[in-house]
Length: 470
Image (cartoon, rainbow, N blue to C red):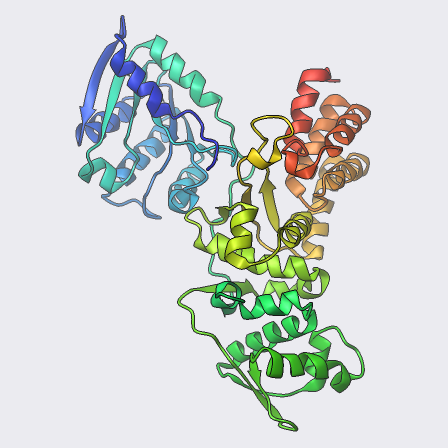
């Protein structure tokens, strides 16, 4: 279970239970919420702050009541009212259309950080009106469900809620809306079907070349829309990284796939082979960029296998590209050892394929009692794309601070996380390189699973121990 922010709705219950002296307060039931909120937004003169778990709207304006409220925010911005909206990151797939529409309208719209869930639904208008309760902005919530909220008019209560909203930690970079990228559709049963999934057997027997060959053949079969493939020893061998002795190098992988694992059918001296597919209602998509960017050759076997697991977990998550699972559950579902899980995840994190948030334990040193890790699957990036983005940072900030920031980020096993590299550049500018390096080394000495070996810990220590240097 994730650590939750104190729900804004909890505050609303306090308003209901406690008399609000010198303030006008009303209970909003059912459709009263939409009518009252719509009117209040239309009459706003100075500012509107919205913190909302979910806004479910279409890509363009419609008669959906949630869409009407969203348009009223956009219209308020057009007439000079300051508008700020914070949305929950775990519902980003649903919030995406609202996020894009607000962003395109020039409104300050943010996603909260992955460290907690923004479950509240609150609005502050002109520093004197509070509207908060159980309503999300969706057609079902606004028109169909049993929902209720409070409308309070009074600067004291408005300030209390606004102060709370401004403390919500936001993400510096919102998650990318998951796309159906082109790639190999692979039955997920190959990695989860008990007692021993076929690809897992390849992994445990260290048959990496057979694993790589099977994925390549499956990709080729999909592109040709047939399970029958003509054998081209030179092509297949080069796909595995061999530059000579094509037949000799392919002999063992082909033999294992045919005789040991039954993943292909190949008769001796035949010029064709047939792929054997297992039935599965669910598929994972290995993006074409996995091959285009050479990751099938660059990553270790544990990282390659864990990449399939990560794809499966992210795809099945309601918060895609975010997902949450303990190592114990990963071990139980996918049969992969905890050591291989840790090694694979660490390498994927280093390549910035996976973002990992490790929770701190309730008690110092009690690592077994801490919450399961939170993960985010990042889009794959080529080395060329990374270098281009890094050059853009160099052009913006200069070579020396960028190089030093890269060294600091590498020390925490994230040499390709451009967001963190840019954050380090800012820290160097604020506190000076030597102080940041000293604190970063201290943080890097912590165990990875402690939750303290993270850039957020660096920032916290700098704020509490070091004066800013300007």
